[in-house]
Length: 89
Image 1 (cartoon, rainbow, N blue to C red):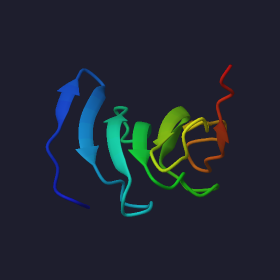
Image 2 (image 1 turned 180 degrees about the horizontal axis):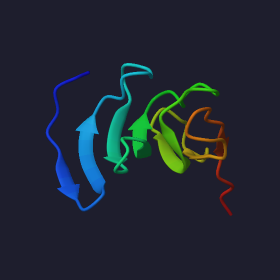
Image 3 (image 1 turned 90 degrees about the vertical axis):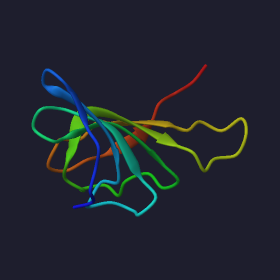
């Protein structure tokens, strides 16, 4: 596990670290009290079936072309994620 600075607000933790089970460019911005990711950013959306992302977790894909959606939501579970693009009007 990478070293990290963290700030805890009750059961919510602001981390700013790389998630251990995902691509090397991902940065976790917010975790719940159980260590499940609530908000993260990176250039690659997490692979389906990866554990550690809370249901409803938001992922910001920073490697998309202009005019293309980059916000994804985990519609799977914390033990098996399934990220889907959030429709934008």
